[in-house]
Image (cartoon, rainbow, N blue to C red; front, side, top):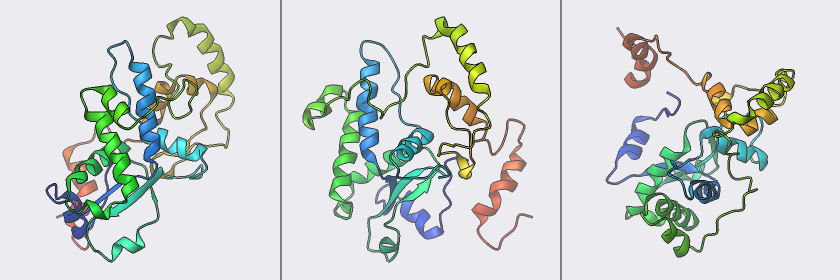
Amino acid sequence: MMNAVGLCPTCHAYYHDALDPLFFFVPSDLDFFIRFELRDRIRRQGDIAKRRVPLAHEYARYQYRQGKITDVAQGGQYTRVYLDDTPWAQSTQAPKQWHGAPLPTIRKAIGALGSPRIGRVPQDMVMKLTILRDLYYLDDEEEAERRYQLQRPSQDDDYHYQDSDEGDDDNGKEEEEEEDEDADDDDDDETEPGTKGGKRCPKWTKQEARYPKRQRQRESRFEWDLGPDATAEDAIRKFGPVLLGPGRRLK
């Protein structure tokens, strides 16, 4: 349940009303996602390739490099937005860290663009969400770039992952040598942010930066709450108390 968010009954009603959403949260740094998509379009040019979207640890790593979060942060920063007049709005304006996948939150926020309460959303956020909506959903990929006068970043732009996941079989021998060199660095105290529950993991080595797909597979070992041998009863006992609410126990 990496993306689970515990909500009180009131917030649950606010968040899940698709016809009239009253609450959503979204990554605080939407520019990162805009530039990530523009950079990914360079990778997709001329090939039939699937879109790459930022993962939770990629967003957190970017914010860490920008000095916005620490190396023990649970994830990147998110902004909470209330679309009605609620006393909570004033006390929840500061960004808050979250370890889950960012794209579902952006999708939820894009859905709120059609709300008649859109005036309560900061205008700058509305513009960036509109740009992301058009970048992701317009059939003509270049239309959004023309409409908003967007420029694709250069190849060395740090907004994007190092795309060397594929087509590197010829470097197998070199990989093994580098892996041996990096093996001695496993006990390094330096860390990268964005792991679930604030758990610390070794800082990326040069080898892992070149082959991020392998690093993502490595990190995924720490994201299982229920493994492949888990039963339905295990899931009920783990999450049942959350669904039942405080003061009630499973029989």
